[in-house]
Image (cartoon, rainbow, N blue to C red; front, side, top):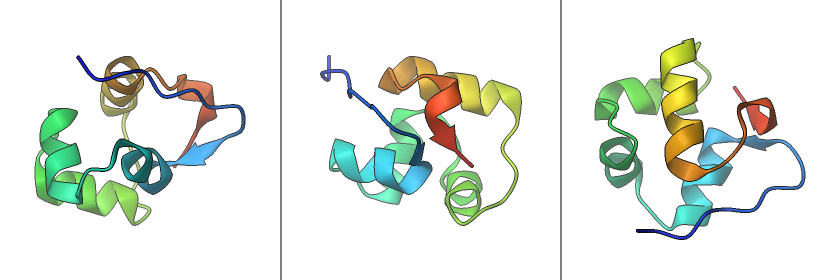
Length: 68
């Protein structure tokens, strides 16, 4: 299991992905979101609550720390 990411300030999806060392495609698979959907979210498309929750739970980054 990957180690949890410790975040002190708010971060973007791209910053979270970069901290994991994954490509967009790898990160999308990691958080169980289709690649094209994830790519749009990283570029600023709205993110729904279930996607945000999934990313938060899997990465360990609290939802209130994720900028989208």
